[in-house]
Amino acid sequence: MSLPDVVSREEWLAARQQLLIREKELTRQRDILNADRRRLPMVRIDKEYKFEGPQGAVSLLDLFEGSGQLIVQHVMFDPAWEAACPSCTASLDESAPALLAHLKARGTAYVRVARAPYAKIAAYKEAHGWEFPWYSSCGSDFNYDFQVTLDPAAVPPVYNYRSQQEWARIDPDWLDLDSTEVPGVSCFLRDGGVLYHTYSTYARGTELIGGLTYALLDLTALGRQEEWEEPTGRAVESREADPSFRS
Image 1 (cartoon, rainbow, N blue to C red):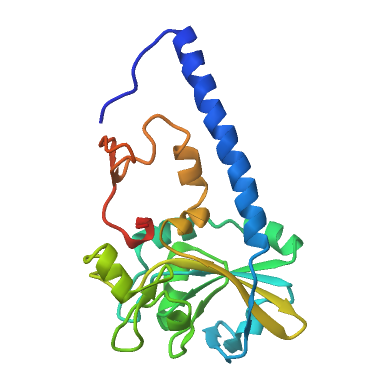
Image 2: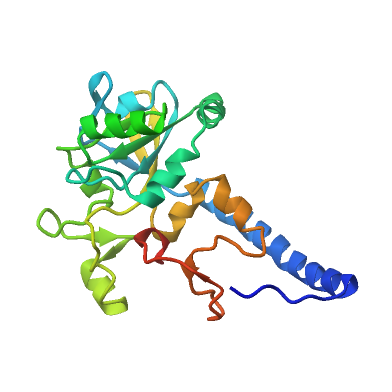
């Protein structure tokens, strides 16, 4: 891994000022994008979804725990696996109780959902010392309807708002994944007992919940120190093939 060029303080300052212009533009664009996201229309949810948690069977409404909003992190944990995917595990490991408290103070619940049976989820949580809410969607259509389980035998695969046929034209290898499970985040709103789906993000969008570690590493010279190709084409780091980082 090559290191950045060594320059004088004056040269560094000039380069930093140029980067600052681009950072401010990105911040303004992000503010506009966030506002547009808030104005995105929503879809009423009429299907009854059932989940299993520590208290037994619960509904999607129960996951709100009285809050007006709900954020669901779709965790990659296939029923046949004994552990969740490493990337998901890393993000789960950074979930502090204070995060849930801050979201709750703003009327927002935050839960994890995976297709693994709840007994496996509970054992995995206990082994890692986690206390956040995590439910099993095993046996329901939830993962399929929100496009985080891609199983042609069950439903035609759609990922990141593209069908299997569209992906075949863009990248023939895209849906040739080692697993049917893929990452995602979905947001819901409730008006009394009526529920709405407001937003879902997949692929690179899941980095929004990647944790503080990545946000801090992105500020450093060596970055995340994983395998990937920089947009310029210059190989700086390496990032293993992971569906959560595909476009």
